[in-house]
Image 1 (cartoon, rainbow, N blue to C red):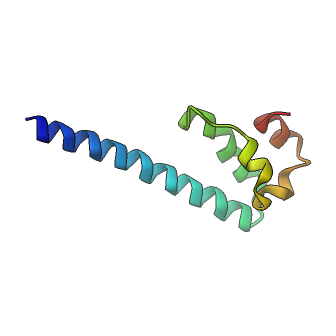
Image 2 (image 1 turned 135 degrees about the vertical axis):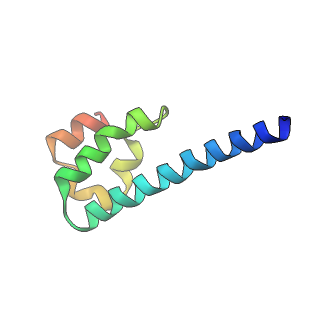
Image 3 (image 1 turned 180 degrees about the vertical axis):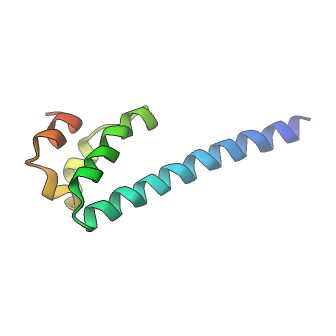
Length: 79
């Protein structure tokens, strides 16, 4: 029973990690396609999905440079 429980926990964690990767790929795709409104929607959802979310990495990643002056991006990522 303990092994089954461990497998369930591992699967749940793997699913969560996989989901985070999928969302990261979606965000990257929208940025590469120039779909800023959808990218901002995905960025807005990050704090709900990642408890330790900080906008610092978005500000440093050159992929998000086109959003740096956007008021919504600034609001979402902090000062």
